[in-house]
Image 1 (cartoon, rainbow, N blue to C red):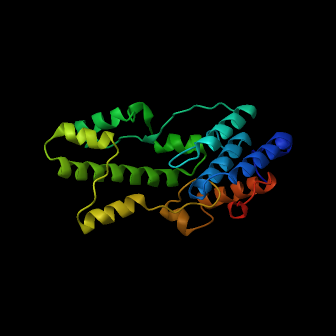
Image 2: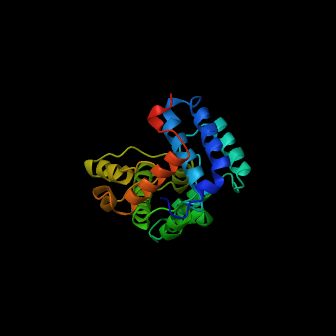
Image 3: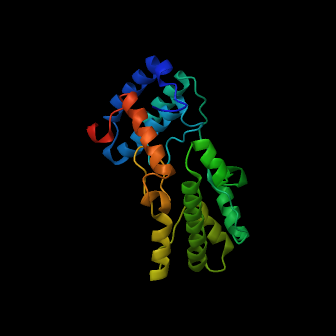
Length: 231
């Protein structure tokens, strides 16, 4: 059984909604189908009361599907906020002023930063996994600072333009490549859209594994088809 889920009371609207989004998956490009399928399951997790907040359209997405998902969310009585963007809180005072100014250009200011404990609570994810994700994201930002500084030298304006434009210079050493690999390493938990921390990846009975089983049961009870069956 699923604790805190009101599936039976909402079966009349959640199951048809799940079928609607599943049908639309067939028209989504294969390259983004996995992300879109995952977004759909996150939407239903919010509607079912499994988590307070869901994030849709992260990374690559399908505009038509996102529009349909947002409309469906409103039909289900959920609130939708377009254009919200979260990034790890800048707890490291070592980030230079020019970098902070550049990310501000991209609207990644302090208001868009979220602490791992807050993100975990809002998205219903294990704190341990979110803490590791934030550490990796901040490590990637620190590497970006180093690479941009080497590329642009003392030209602060050039550094800001590179960061504001999302430019990631190519690592030049084996150490830098290892840093980039470590910052980008992920271990997705099947069903929920959370990347497992090292501890959860090694033990299916830790929080991420338990969450995955709840999401799998949610998909089963809503007849939301496994991604492998969508063509």
